[in-house]
Length: 533
Image (cartoon, rainbow, N blue to C red):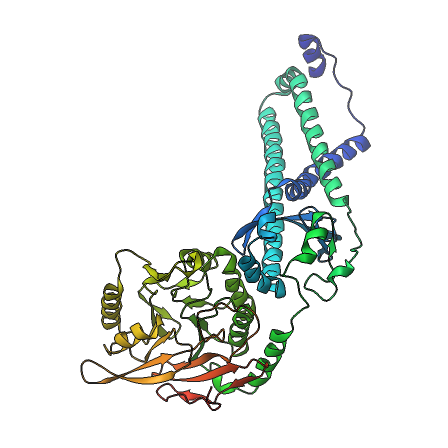
């Protein structure tokens, strides 16, 4: 009696007829396709159902959700619709972005807050890139997670099946057939459930891939000539936005400045690094002039600077809403390293935003930057102007001015850095008098750019202090985030680690949009403003 018949008599179940070879091959192909399709479908479904990415823009969290098959980007479910989208060649489909944010932050009632946001609306490209990067990271991360989960599931099932076959092969044929017949119902149920689940997943993945949401953007004519030109506006947004003061004709002033800056630096090979020599850009006191943050970042890119050194006062009020200046510097500098010594107007909110972007925030310790050493220290005070107060408070209750001077001077004399970076030139002068820095103390908090100054040390020697002016063109503490009303200045420094010599040039941006770059001066030569301004 054949073994299968014996097994049938033992179990009381009829044996299954053998499948023809063609059907057996088709079944094997179907199984292979199912195993291969699961990871792909899982990747597509993961992108569809995963929670949105989070990006902080102007101090508020913004949810970013890529949508396969969509050829627009939409804010708040279509309140604003823009034509920007990406195209995935590998999948042959478009990818749009749905963005959600806090309405109260998008349309703030406070006039001063709207004034801060005006600069963001005038030049949104840095934040748009961050949204695009978040969308790309989201697609890569979640599709990879989904694919790996699907691959592990398919691989796990394949391993189990192979293990079962090996274990059955170890039994005599009669016993193997008996075991197979005994487990047939359970096996059939599991196979049916697994195939059903895989088919449902494949169907969901196919639906995700085939989803199409093509939309022709109907640009609202009321926004012609504004920063929202080319945007479709619907619902409440259409009623509110035209009356906001943050909307005005597009301002091209800083576009003109950028072109003039590029022209002024075209033939300045003396300001670019050569060999082991270094170049860095020194600036401070933007105080919400986002357009000048753009020029400082652009200068660092144009001269191929090794890093940017900022001596504080990025913002005026130190509010999270003002933190987009950090993104502007990063965007136009092409993500160059930034060493930041917070000033009086740089509150903890701004410091945290800088740290979140990967900036090197001063902590009072010396570190090596390429071929030089730098001691950067935060100002011990924080201004109360952002909370409509008067005066300052200590950044750290345990560190007053005397403690700050003592600690920073001790660190400088212990480590002998090439440069010391801090905000206040009054404090900088006292640190320079120690004579412990090798090259110069770099500081600011001076509306007028002073340049290099000789300082008599307490031991009877000499040292050097380099004081920059307002990169925002300020001549007072009054906030003015728009176009320049006065000349704005910052510096480009060069440094040769081999012979411990350096130089600097002064970049001046005038209210008319003109840009000049001074000849390169020795690090110990004073600066004389040729225009006397």
